[in-house]
Length: 504
Image (cartoon, rainbow, N blue to C red; front, top):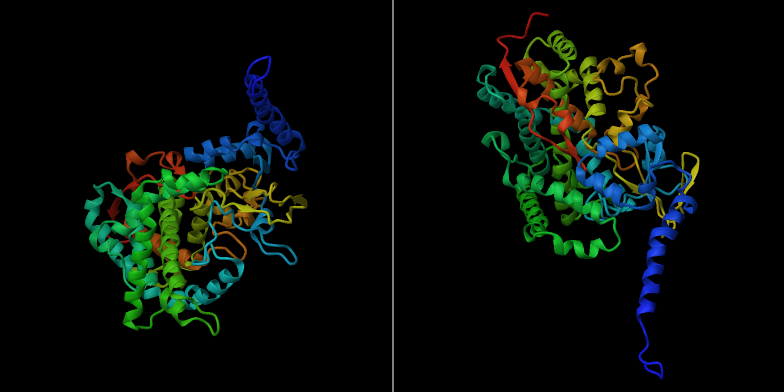
């Protein structure tokens, strides 16, 4: 545009526009988040209230489990950890956030954390989830686990034999966590696909499983990045081709294994049998069977191996607790074969207390599995939390921060199984806050199987070996990083075979 005064000067226009944008993002928006946003009444660091970046930096550092505990220690039991996010360590929050209540809409899983996917139980809609869970329930019932007892014991037998071969009379430093993974994956592989992965037989991780582990950290960071509005559209361009191919490869492998299992026509108490049989009008498609077999394999193995690794470390660094557990096992069983009875190990009170205390100090899912409020919002612990499109709130329970808070447990950072056995020193503990497998309609369907495996493997390990920690694993727990789960470092121990179980 021209005139008597010459060309129109756009410089001033762009300067005003830049100043307006800067003012909006540097002044107006932060002021809104700090003083006028519906979550402004909740305590928390101010920088976290105006931007998601502090949360992102924390999550990508792998130190969420530590930083969130520090924030709750400083600000209280409900903390604002983002412009639209609240973190809870109040025990009653479990039912309010994850439970299902009459006349209250369920808080769905955050889509960036668990994308909706009607092909498997983890991401299915409410109706499809209920159908899949109903069909699968029989495979995880007490009766089914009793039928699976000989299968589980067979793999534990092989685990113990392999550890005896590797122990070198206690001289070798063994990464016991890897061996727990081998055993857990072989068990779950047999239950999900009708045959093991051969990890124990080959003393190594199956390449398919190695692919999964290789992508978990990248997947976790990718899930966090999807929280930002623009990034989901460009994120696929940043992912290496091999990782983009991984999903297809995993599903193809699962489809081949499922087809092979179904072709045998055998009837056995495994997951495939439950899924192909259905229940009345409730059935699963072949695609759903393939996807669920894959999801159950990943979810049903890593949690057990993680908990077992944590238990060994905690017992090895607490000799008094180790001695009490060894004495209980000694008194309860006349021979090792008796430990194979899953009901027998389930009745050991101190083993049960060790199990709970391990899950408290080292929960397999240390950080929150976030939910979001529905469109109409929800009332959480008496406060209305908004849910409109622009004000949808992320709500979550960071498990390790909840369990290590002095608000909930006395001497919270100490490994004390006696707190679960009625010791009066811990009468004020909020034991109801420990829900390592979550609560509500979407809690872990494999919880009973995980407990059965954990107790038998730990009892058999201590029956066979004196366990001591190798020097290179001192302080192991303090070095861990966490994302959606623990990024476990190797745990090296020495396993000195017992000539016979010590005199009681």
